[in-house]
Length: 194
Image (cartoon, rainbow, N blue to C red; front, side):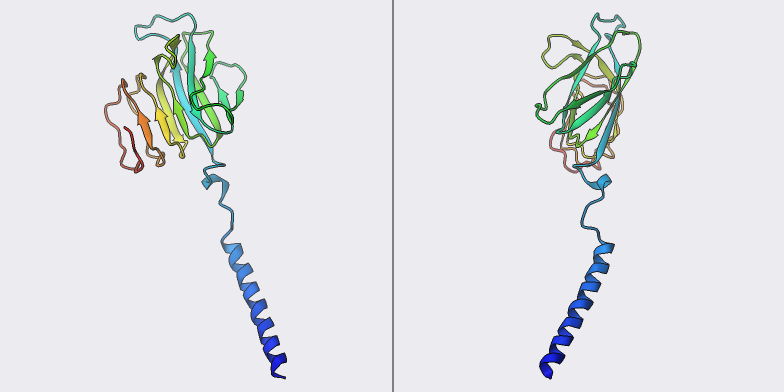
């Protein structure tokens, strides 16, 4: 008789525990919401590009390029009416130059980049990555929607201000030969290089 009572009590405890566990599991989902998951977060970067020299004389080619640290597909709106460009950066090195040539050099272009898991951006104004040709400058950069950015290099660009308050994961930041007057890095606790 005691065996039956013990078995019945064990079964009741098991079912009660299972019910309680199921209730708790609904309160605490196992998956991280997509907007908080660095691997699935859609980053957006916006920059203003000018393809001219400091004195206003325009170069013939009007190229603008940058590189991204990213292992997914990104979409780029070059801001000149051309169709958005989708690029799969999964197997490309982080130094791979993403390049565009503008036909109308007298217009300021707003370049918008979006994609999952964008971890870094490099753009160098003046003579670019390989110093073989002229690259446009960026005068404005909005990385507030790229909160998992770990690398940012904006050397040789005449930026006067930059907001890094949403980029708490930023480790590396290069801004030589820029016009930044001050920079608040109080929320960027992982900085290694400034």
